[in-house]
Image 1: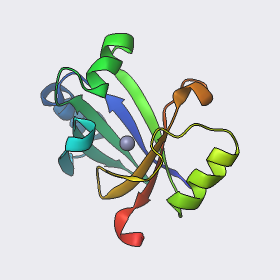
Image 2 (image 1 turned 90 degrees about the vertical axis):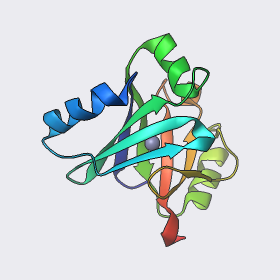
Image 3 (image 1 turned 45 degrees about the horizontal axis):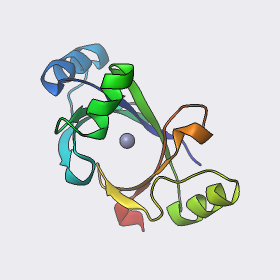
Length: 135
Ligand code: ZN
């Protein structure tokens, strides 16, 4: 795995969190994107080499609203950049990690993504991501 590509933060309201993070990081959100497959609205910020991804649930039953119900707002996942997502998924599977999707899916910000089951990773949801046009 390479660098931490971004940190995902679950928020109740992007309308509240987006201006707050703009103030906090002293930078403007460079992209907002709805990811239909995940049922989320996202907002991205660049912070040097890495990014912050704010996640708001697009509907009541989405993964983000369930996460907030259980744990409240806060860090939702850590995403690592990988060079070859397929071989990294194979490697992790052979090490006994459970993948939440068996094939890479289209994530936000032009990425192929795969999530690992947090039960295998000390409760931390891990995302692998690879730039989509580099494949
Ligand atoms: Zn993410």
